Image (cartoon, rainbow, N blue to C red):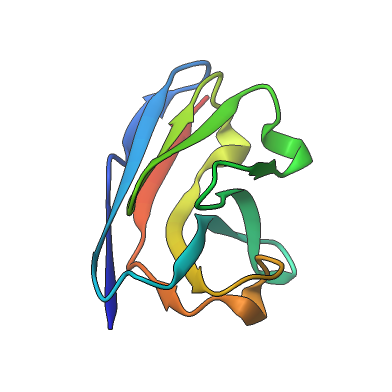
Length: 120
């Protein structure tokens, strides 16, 4: 089993920054891609950013140029700059085993989420 624990959420004014962290523990040997999801209107959750075990990254269009994902083994980080009120959400850390696309159906483990609130 794998446990994912997020931290770093909070309240920030528009234009500000936050850094989210996710630490994985447990049986990690086959974890490949890790990333961040958040709820979206009309969807269960939408991808924010992901990073593979060899450092390849993928970003949603709505965060490109503002958010940066990084990784140190089973720890991932999301540096969030130029935050907007629309970024307000619970951010969930996610991880999958094996190779393939990092989609909702492929996720094997979820964290409990960390709340990000951006005031205008």
